[in-house]
Image (cartoon, rainbow, N blue to C red):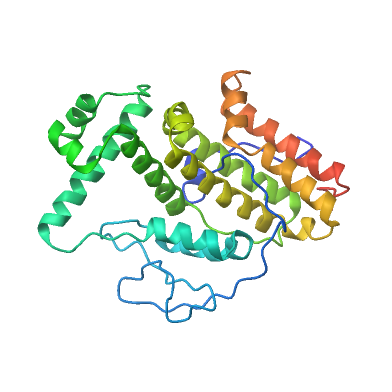
Length: 301
């Protein structure tokens, strides 16, 4: 193929994935570089370093196996990689979302396990095609009582929001940065391969959440966070090309890249056009390549 993209199996892509929602591009497109200072505690948690409020700092937490949001070393590197494009305010919100840790006492740990089993039960039912399961069905799948479900979640919307947060955690366990000095065609191929994998894995939960988004501010906010990650990743990955353009064509190019790498676009390719994953991936690669060429940036360089 002229764009240099070829589909590879999910087994070859187990460590790197990306996730997107709908576009929301602020001005300026990229935030100023954000200095990072790392101060690790024994748990290596990702939290804002409150001792230096004038800057945005992170503590990096590794995948230690304890409860809460596990973000792994590769995702810590990924968050650092996209931090200048993401901006301090959005990074702080994302860190706050992921930095929860249950109390170490046994009762709290059991409660956390029950909550996680309920969330995973919901995700399993979504994967099986049940996009709106009843609380009773979720409880049965999780192996807990219906009362336990309501002890942890006020309603099914709250459970969906928790599942959306879990989706962010899962994706951040898989992503990692890449070398932006690689040829443009290779970076396009690398990006598309990861999108194919993550879209296919996350589609059941996203379809379920999309049904409830018009009625849930929490779900809409969760989707916006996915947009932040996607926007920052694109701005970082293709910074060498974007920075060669004037502000207006740069913004237009980024909008074009976002438009064809959003999950709704992927879902339309898969559902409306009935394309196989490799065909849908090839279509996105072709459109990404065309977007750069329209902007005067050849992938052959």
